[in-house]
Length: 434
Image (cartoon, rainbow, N blue to C red; front, side):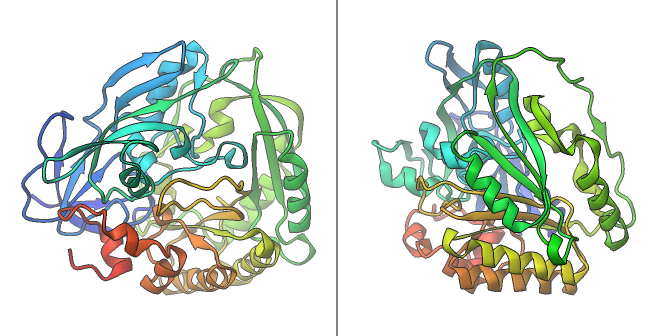
């Protein structure tokens, strides 16, 4: 029976059938409609949706196969969450080398979207630390894929949006850490020029760097924000309480709007904790600030929201990001969850990987219909002109022409797609009818 399903952005809402996988040894369903693996549903647009198709729910593939505390190598099924890996390995002095802004994603989803984190300039993207995985195709074939074994399948599946088959399990390399703590500092910067100066000065000494940007600010304050930087550290501190906030219902209207944004951004920029020297942070608030608020996506109301993340090359980054922030400020729409960071130069390993050298800007916009879509299209104009790209995992509306320009290897990648796999995103951006 078809179910009404959304992604984390809560738009679009689509109908698809669902089957829950429980064993990595089972054959894939002999479905008459296209299939698509679906992890924990933390992608923002339609890359994890399959209108009128079949979703293969993978959270049932949640077993650890082995962990070697001497080498830090974890082998687990693809439905295991990063949160569950951290709970296992951190008490023994290990941590994932790369993690995005939420720990509530599956290993399969992390590989399929080749996720990145605040330390991309040092550690590159998630796939750099994947030793191998098993790929299960709809014809029953199973491939062990690594940079040295079936490397073409490895490169197609990394960042391959779940289209090359089902990842059943993976072997991952963890990195040594001294505990759950980060030591660093945070400071305000007054405009975009100051961000680029801070970022350049921080890359050598700090593994993790990221900035929050006030998208409402204009004029000489355009691009002002708060810059955080830190390193894994030995230390002792008070562990934060594990209790989480929970938004129990969806408000009838978005709580993020023109009236609230200006106040929220002002309060956040000038809050007392914005400036900290020699701070000791627990990894939770430092890496995953929103994970402490369950169902936080409900604050945008029943219409949901659009996430927009782009990367623009270094040589054009200052001009392009300045133009984007100016357009956003003038639009009156604004974004509260606005994140700015420089990527590193180490190339990703996937044909369709998003992260590449340059500056990345990630934004959340309440779904205001045509006005919001028009603003996002202007941001696409700037991204295309700069030779950048938009992240498929956070997209719900880019045009086919834009996608094919952002990812020129898409035709070569198409040869690796499982003939019984597809997604709403892929059909939208390629015109595929499967």
